Length: 324
Image (cartoon, rainbow, N blue to C red; front, side, top):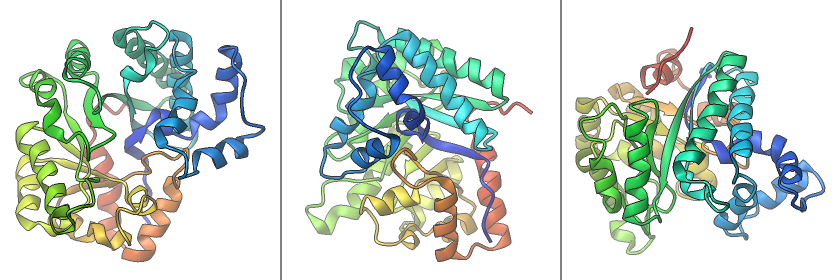
């Protein structure tokens, strides 16, 4: 049975579908030459695995360096998700990528949050901003981003994103530690990918990163957590601590991290009572949620109970307020 998903808990704003709609205008505003002849041309470039992902995203972040452009992004993100029928989303952004023209990370954060709040008000959607540390950042930068989250006093969620293999969760322990005892909710991309060799320890290294995020970083949520369904003890820890899991099945599949969405054991996690949700991750270049739902249901044939769980877990696991 196909669930009707009305919210997203794992959604990168600069990798969201809204970018395709506003990027040309952002280039014009920045007085930069737009290199693409059409939206299709841009998406063809962005989906090209032969081009380094950092270089692909630089095409976007290079014109997101002013308060005005970041407000535009935040506002249109809220509008896009509301137009698609979502009532609640959590939008991720990393301020370290928006300081090339003199903005501080706090100014960049304030601008995108301002745009989001204006969009929320106009389009009737609830959006929780998620401030992210790009894990390649040094410890000082990570601490500065965590400090911004603390200053917002719970309005922002803190997350750790990007290259998990080179920069495991413990690298930014002190940034997360800064939020202990505050109102900040903590999320973390963990158990998504590590170096492929040695093969015999690959899965255990993924599981170790999940454990680090849970026990050391004291996370309230884990993004991806690919091998979780194969470790009953860790499933028990997730349940005991009330941790939500934001899965991205087709992101994992298209990235070659799994061979079939059944590798994620979504049915087992749901039946165990895990607050698991399905998400698109970056639907600028990855499948949109209708495709995610359809492909996963085709493999799992979700029961009515499981479908209802997938629908309700979005709201049970939400870190922010949902305005009725």
